[in-house]
Each structure stands twice: as C-alpha cells, then as structure tokens.
Image (cartoon, rainbow, N blue to C red):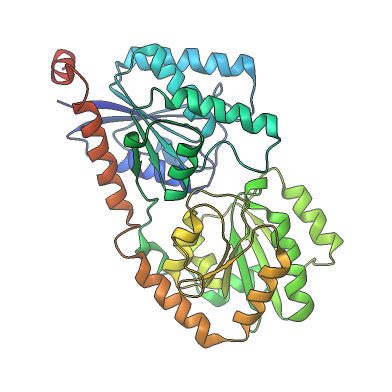
Amino acid sequence: MKARVVHAITRLELGGAQQNTLYCVAHHDRSRFDVSLVAGTGGVLDDDARAIADARVLIVPWLRHPIHPFWDAVAVARLAAHFRRRRVHLVHTHSSKAGILGRLAARFAGVPALVHTVHGWSFNDAQRPGVRRLFTALERAVGSFTDRILVVAESDRRKGLARGIGREERYRLVRSGIDPTIYERPSSSRESTRAAMGFAPEHLVIGMIACLKPQKAPLDFVETAAAVHARHPAARFFIAGDGDLRAAVEARIRERGLDGIVRVLGWRRDVPALLHAMDLFLLTSRFEGLPRTVLQAMAAGVPVVATAVDGTPEVVRDGETGVLVPPGDPSAAAVRILALAADSVACAGLAARARDALSGSFDIRRMVEQLEEIYVETLASKPGWVRLVSDDV
C-alpha cells in the first residue's frame, strides 16, 4: 500500500533547493512511496532528474519562472490534470513559483495532502513594495490550505507567521542537508584545480558558488574582491555559477580592472574540488533560506565569510564557526577577509569548529527521514486515508 507523492519545482538549476529535491526523489522509501517529479524545462539538472531510477519524471515547457498570466494559467490547469490522472495522494512543492501554482493545482484537483518547503520566501526587502505585497498575499492565500509548511531555517518560520502565512501548528523545521563525506575528498588536487583557473599555489584564493542572480548579490562579491585586492595583491577570486547577472558581473570586473584577478567559471559540477582550491569561502547574499553551499564549505574545512541574513546565522556563529558580515557592505567583508588572511591559526580554528558543528543536524539522510515522517503524519490526519489507499491498489 503505497502513497503516491509528487514533488514539484519550478526549474532544476544548480542550486541547493533543486539538489535536495532530486536527492529526496531518488531516496524516498520505494516500499512506502510511489514517487514522481514535475519541473520546468531548461535546468542544468534536467538529465540528472531523468536518470533517477523508479521515479516518474516530467520536465515540461509550461512551468516557467517569470510571471506570465497565460502560461501560469496553463501550468495550473495541466498540473491539476496530471494530479487527477495520477490520483496523487500528496503534493510536495518547492520554490516560489511552483509552490504557488502547484498548490493551487493540487487544491483544484482534490489532492488530499499538501506540503510546501520554503527554501526562502517569495517576498523580500529588495522587491518593490507592490511586488512584495502581491507575493505576500499569494503566500497567505495558498498557505491557508497547506497542510504542512516546512522551513529550512527558524527565521523563515518567524517571517511567515509575522505575515499571517499559515498557522503555527502547521510549520515544521526540516534543515537542508548534505552528505559531508562528499566534500572531504576532492577528485582532483588543490594545485591542479587552481592551475586550471590560472591561480598559483602562493595566491590567497577566495571563492563563491552561487547562481548569478540578485539574491546572491554577485556584484557585492566583485566589490569585495576589489577592496581586498587593493590591500592584498596576491588575492585571487572566482565565482562558480551562472545566471541573469553574469554580463553585469563581467562588466563590473572589467570596470574595476580585475581581469585575471576575478574569474567567472559558469556552472560547475566539481564542487568538492573547487572548495578545496579555496582558502576562504565568501557568500554575499542579500537574503537566504539556509545556504547549502555554506554547509558544503564547512564540510570541506574551508573558513566561511557570509552575510548575516535569514538562516545563515543559524549555521554560522560569528567568530566561532565562521565570520558574519552585514549584507550590502563589501568594505566590511573585505576587512574581515584581510584579518583572516593574516591569521592562519584563527582560520584553522574556524574550520575545525565548523566541521564539528555539522554533525547530525544537517545530514541529508536524516532530512529524507523527516520528510517521510511528515508525509505519514499528514496523510494519517486525513479522514478515510486508509480507505483511499486501499481503493486505489
């Protein structure tokens, strides 16, 4: 007697939410769950999704990230038809667009149970007030009929409740997880990875792994690089990622005279090797859920400098397991980076304590177990659940 579960996500770009979703789809207990995935087309991880054994994967052109009334209506209608045809028992949505459209479609299709993971809310302070109010209203509307709202950080629970999204008893904390062993042993040497980027062993290498979009503030990364390099000429920088802001980032690198000093690598799959090529990991986000790349850097033993936004301080304790700096302040980030560059003992202490702090709470296998416990709990609360499954098998 299996529960039919569908995961829905807007697009399978190379991000933490997407990687965690694919891990769940691949590792759910097949003796209890019949698992499928719906995602919009054009993601870096599309082929990874299609390669998952024993899971139905639907990559579709009509689930699109930009707001578009026609295509959004098409997406709701087609998702609802898919859920009805598959006689789905539980829909688990991820990301803002799929989270709103997917839950509306599940509601229209009469899906018994709805679960949504907040990997960072759809509204944020960087948006225009009208846009922020619109997204808040939409989250409040779909939150009213969502059975479980999962957050990766306590800050997202507080933020959602403060805006009247869902009821407190419907929230659950499920930390974003990683497999730390993957990041302990890179497939290539530190020296060869650096050499491929044009960096020498004696360089101070600072990197960021992130999508080049406003949330991650990659222009702040470039400004931080300019400030650090002015004081520390041996410093070198790279960003592994791609996105809408790539052209702007590359233009800013040229404006600051940082050609050859700051490299933009595009999407990369060799994350462990890139982490081990770094001396410091820098994350300049303006807002976050719980950044998976910070966990990866900690697992690799790389000291972290990150902006103190949303869920990040729940992972990085300033001066203990990393360094926190104000968002939007490259000068402050540069000061802390230069201090770490001059203190190898402090760096080693941060890295060691960060590795110790990862144990247990951020294990990706535990994340899947928690989700399955929530699925069972949610379905068990539905009247006639046993009869519903029995009739379908």
